[in-house]
Amino acid sequence: MPEDVLASPPRRPLGRAGKVVLALLGTAVAAGLVFASLGDGGGPGPLPATPTATPSGAVTPVAGPVRTLAGAPAAGPTGLRVLIPADPPVVIDLDVGTRHPVRGIPSDGDRINSVTSLGPNEAIVSSDRPCDDCSPDAELYLVGGADHEARRIGTGRSAVPDRDGRSVWVIRDGARDRCRLDRITVHGGEPDRHELATLDCGIRLVRDTERGLVLDGPSDGASDAMLLDHDGTSRAELRGPVAYADNAWVQFDMFGRRVLLRGGMIEWHWPSALEAPGELVPDYGDRYVFAEFAAPQEVPVPGGEHVQRLDLWVLDTVDPRWIRTPRMPLAVHLKATSAAWTVDNRLVMVGSFPQVGEAAAIWTRGARDWKVRRVDLPAHPASDTFALLEPPF
Image (cartoon, rainbow, N blue to C red; front, side, top):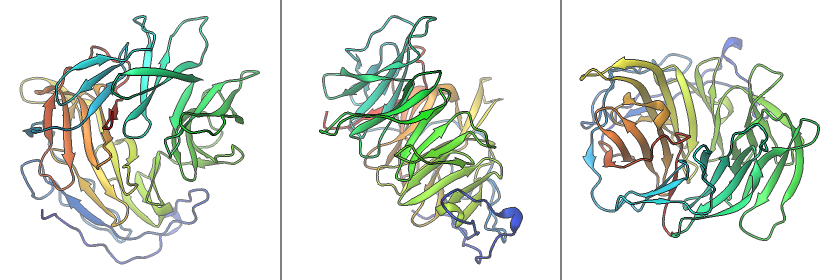
């Protein structure tokens, strides 16, 4: 399908004010970019605002009117199940519409649950029971397979899977008002590893990368984001959310409103006119990264409903270019909507969409629009996140 492309400007070094140094990754120099759009959902077409290149390799942020989710019904099997962190957690089969509660996780009506994918067909559920005399560590469960049965794997305040999907990093309550970093083996014969580092209990695990663990929480520096090596011995401050794809760092520079690739060797201003950056999430092939931009302020849409806006982009880290997904900026309820990759590189949104209701929307790169399937989500889940469960179940 044809794409609107902006040729890259000549390379030239940045001045002192334009340099951003990411620890361990060297000095930033600017480069060009290729910019691509998938149009507004009705087929290929020009962007709402034409991007322009500057000598520093930046682009004019793209704006445009808010749009609503439409798209064609998702015909045929998707092969997807969605794990929603309700109390109790439920698994929704997108192909037949059934909902199954996850067995083996306590449910008492006020559990705060969250989910994190552990590979394409398993997930970790963190189940927390808020009370004055409860342990600050949540209970952690592994969920997968066709029986929707959970297996308890331990406890922790925060947990993320490692990159190979065989173990889980956890931050646990420790001694003297400090917390410790442990690693729990989920698959395979490697022993658990304990107390790899001592951390402030306010720190949260974000993601495991080849260069270390991305952490978020209290910091003595200008940023709350940190990189901790896998041995727990070295820390570096980061300037915003990061992802690791195809041996290339992708980073939001929160202060300069820029996106940096390969440690700053290529940089852009944010491609979106929306000001609040969200997650940077690499696909399973470690080539494509989706980047969320949002506007929490509500705006009206036809029919009188007030909505928030989401602008979802995909960055190709090998052939550096931005791809805007269809119908952006999209009318959403941000606290009830999230996105994730499938193992075959489909991008899936699940949530609540004005004028549509609760739905799953599936997009494949190069497609003109989203494929939409209505879903019946459980009431009041504790988190907007979800995990995709793909065959084999």
